[in-house]
Amino acid sequence: MSVAMMREKPVMEMKKIAISAKRQITIPQKFFSTLGFDTEAECMIRGNELVIRPVKTSAGGEFAEQILADLIKQGYSGDELLFRFKEAQSQVRPAVEGMLEEAKRAATAESPFASYNDVFGMEDEG
Image (cartoon, rainbow, N blue to C red; front, side, top):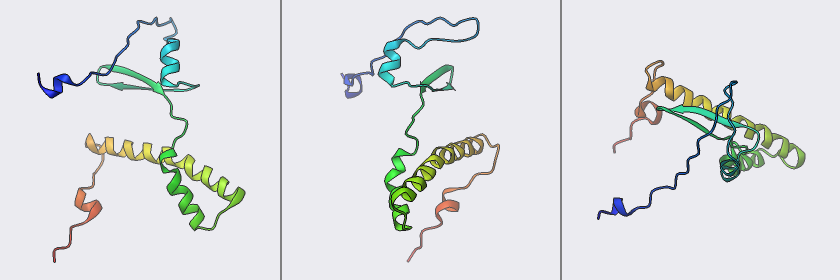
């Protein structure tokens, strides 16, 4: 038996759910709790599947340390630091979504794209 065959496959649970006349569904409680849904969900098409997942409420959290370090370098502290941090953190998700949308347009030839060398330049030979 190969190593690939020995790996465990992710556990997948399925449950049939009804769709109302208004196209509404109810997320089963177990799925709702396990995945950490709150008041919003993201809905997208992936291939021939409809994917519904919780909206991450801590958008930009992965950049929090860098944002804070930069604001502290700029001299902010106290309430002003908190205000500026919240403002900067709220801009992370829209910026990332914009970059993803631009990448999608470039991938489908709807907009020009930049090559690796355009972005990073040529390595100096010496």
